[in-house]
Length: 196
Length: 196
DNA sequence: TAAAAAAGAATGAACGTTCATTCATGGTTT
DNA sequence: AAACCATGAATGAACGTTCATTCTTTTTTA
Image (cartoon, rainbow over all chains, first blue to last red; front, top):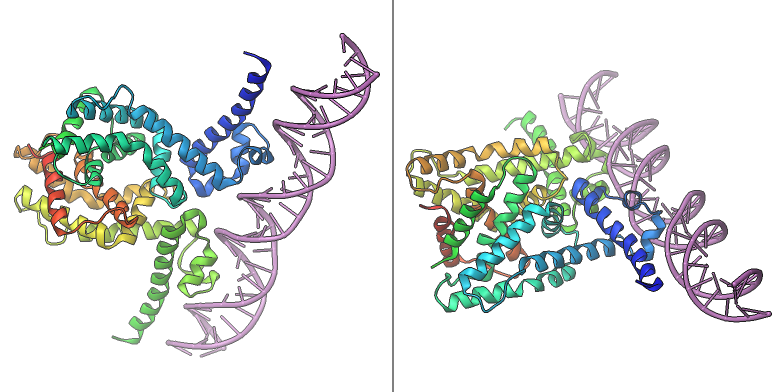
């Protein structure tokens, strides 16, 4: 590791710290109560430093959104490839997403907040959606093979993946806990919803 | 209608206007960009007048949340009583909620924003949850009768009611439209998810 | 290689603006 | 005239952002 790389890492570290701090504060207090001053303090940085890495607050939020969305998608398709049988592929993706939402709670809660709030520019939101294509393709395949109901991808998503957001929120509020066994039952619910 | 009532109506009118204005602004720009000055202006009222009806901004938001939540529950159980067969009762409630989410879009979007954001005090949120009891009772009944899978009420909600929030959001962003026929198919999806 | 110069990162204080809230006052109704 | 509703203007605090400056690292020069 040469001198150049060390320097680059240091830069990235500050950016990382800022993104992490923003995630934490927005999750804990909401966008309306996550001022730049607090973000800077939590990241261990002067307020002005933020503007070396981001244009303004909106840009910071947008960047965070896209970054988290990308990590979500990466996780969703781990171990999946599109030659798999539809049900197997779906099961892998579903469990990947469930793991993400139930373990990386902060990231998932942030995404859920962004998706239900006008805090992200619509244009950026659209960009973050593209990553999900493999799942949509899988569903098309399943419909062609007569395994999955011939429904819009929105309905399929709403009744298989989206419910996990609710369960995550309930778990976060200590109203409910999903263990391994219940998770299996829950997958069955999702599959029953869309299977033919 | 006597003078007293007219006076009371006038008061209520201003309060109503303020609640409506808040709903609109929070939906369009988010809590972080819905200042009291704009709320007052949209309601046709001076900023100071808000404080005749609400203690402060948080109190205004809390009141709006509880009011909308109550109207949601009222709508949900219209035409339902607990002597009905489980599936019939569930169908009535499900369609009621679907109608609410797809027609009273502003109210529904506001609730969804509140439920995914720390903008409402947890205590108030809990209060707004009580209204749903009849549905939970119905599910208990269905489980006892062996009609519905023996799952936690959270899973049942997540896979039948909560998906409607997603479909509403997609419809609001003009990505998708639910007509009568599709709505029927969608109910079937919800029912297949939880039926035994 | 050591000193000097330049460049780059990071900062704390300060800016203008906007925020939620209050206050002194004016109209209206009883 | 008393009580109440409503107000526009005023207030201090807090916001996002900028700026002049310092500290640190890299490059150049001798």
